[in-house]
Amino acid sequence: MTDVTMTQSEANKAVYRRMVDEVVNKGHFDVVEELFDPAYVDHLAPPGMPGGLEGVKAIFGAFRAGFPDVKFTIDDMVSQGDIVATLVHGEGTQTGQFMDIPPTGKHAKWRSVGFFRVHDGKIVEHWGIPDMLGLLIQLGIIPPPPVESASGTLEAQA
Image 1 (cartoon, helix red, strand yellow):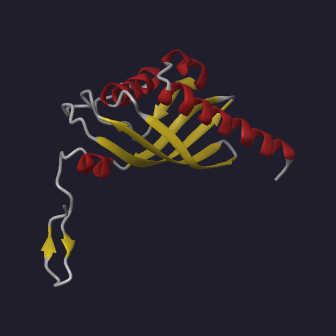
Image 2 (cartoon, helix red, strand yellow):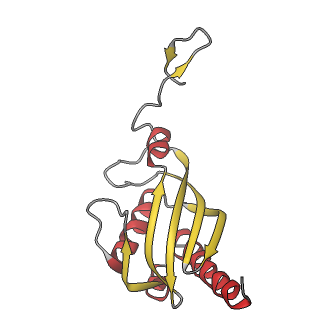
C-alpha cells in the first residue's frame, strides 16, 4: 500500500469518526451537509425514511428522539480504497418515542455493521445492518427466544 492510499484511507476514516462524534453522539445535524454528499444513498434505510441528506437527519433524529443519551462507540474500522467498514455499538435509554415504540425507560445496547463509501471527503453511500432484533428484545417489545435447559426442553429466557 502506498503512502497516498494510507493517507486517503485515514482521511476517509476521519470523516466517519467525525460523523459518529458530531452527528450521532452530539446531535449536531448542521454538519450533515459537510460530511455527506447531496446525492447520498442509504441502501438499507428503514422503510418510509426520506432519501439524501434529509434521510440522514431523519434516521439519526429518530435515534436521538428515542434515546436522548444515545452514544455510539467505534469498536473497529477498516478502510480500503473509498470504502470504510465499521463495527460500532450504540447504547442509550429509551425515554422518548423510537419509530412507533412508545418510551420504555429501558437501557439498551446494540451493534451495527456498516460500509460507507467516501468520495472527495464526503460520505456518498451506506450499507448497514443494526441488530434491531437484539434492541427490540432489550426494550421488551418482543420476547427473547427460548433456550434449551439442561434437561433438553425449551424454556423462556428470564
